[in-house]
Image 1: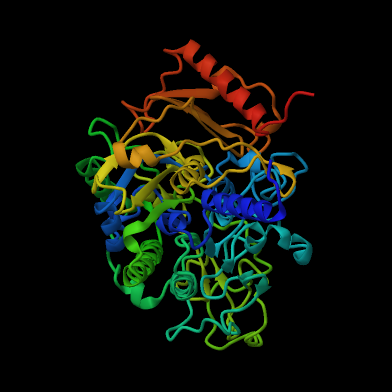
Image 2: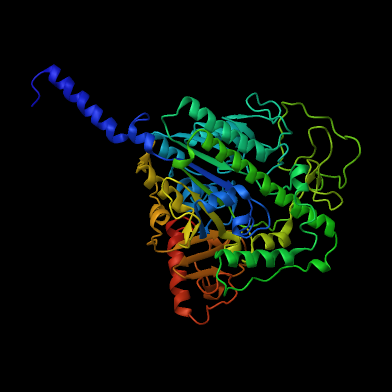
Length: 585
């Protein structure tokens, strides 16, 4: 028993000091040793779209990170932008977060159109562990913007980030994006008092530059604390927008069409050891020689390549800033993509909103003021009053007056060697590069890791390497347990991952990866409606051996009917557990 007040005060002070030491205060030695973490995500890019994964597009900065770090050959996303971002940020499967589809509220637990209070973001987990938290780029895990003020509860600053610069919703002009935001305030490229570049404003550059600014200011004001930063590019999502000088670097590279590029990438992937030499190249979806508008089609891919090479330069500036601040050694950098190459053609955009198919010589609309917000995903006009010609084959992609996608044929090239695209859960939709760079811990530089892994593993990895506390409750709400597995021992020891399976669902496309086997749905007659169906016919599944045939060319379902049945039941049980399909009433 403590006998007097003085002794009691000394006891309490000692206990408090012990607790602070255990928790790791922001300026403790323990916190100083924790790594900085930068997650970099690109948008709508295929498995073979960067140089170190087979591309002819030069990405020296990413290639350098790969050669001094690790490449994962079997890392998976969720096949679509919103679900991937929700899964990456929370360590859960998409429907567990409420983001099973896109940003519309479908009034089902898994499809609320936003990340809910039943999950925590990486930023929310790391702040109590002494981290500063920053984000630059695309958010896209909040609901639509019909009631802006009431929806800010799910914007980055309200989900654990100290600083935010970027866009709340997904696609938009890279010259003048809608929902451009600093902190909690909508801005335009021209009324932002904190960032006015010397060159013409371009969103990819702005994302990179603001990420660099966050690192610089962190070093000035919080050098004793580690930081977490999420850098979410919109490159290379449509529209195909890039500076002309960047496009010029790729001029003429695609004049011979699809087949030579696919074959070159295929051979390079084999030579790099990223795919097995016995796998077959998936089917090519178009014959270049039979198509019209070849110059327009080649230009589309030139601009797409320019969007990637420009992003790569920005990543280089981020890495250079880390070097300058002597932070690179103990910073974990992860680069990945949100889904496969995109076959969308923008045909759903209204002709009424975009009546011009060529660009007039003079402006036809009133110019927009510097502080006038852009309010459309596909703008009707540029800031200087010119009309935007949506998907017109009479204008070449790149400048602000254009709004193109590169379509399924080039997406087939981007996804070399795999089948299908964004939306689908065949490998072309869900396979992504993952580059891991961390000089302080990753010693097997330049090696490939072949363990099947998923976005859900990122949260588990970060909790592991930072000793952060993943909460059971947060702000009074019960929190879903993590679904993923830490990759730390994969980084350092190349250990196998002990897991039951990896699961997928998007718009009725469904799959389960269990060891070397993958069960994946065939074409479903009612996309988007499947999750309301409680039973699935067995003939709607295809089975592939991923060790022998990851390009999914040889369906083995008829040879292994019992395996199909068992894996289908396992998928169904997961889907009910995770709100991917409703539980039976």
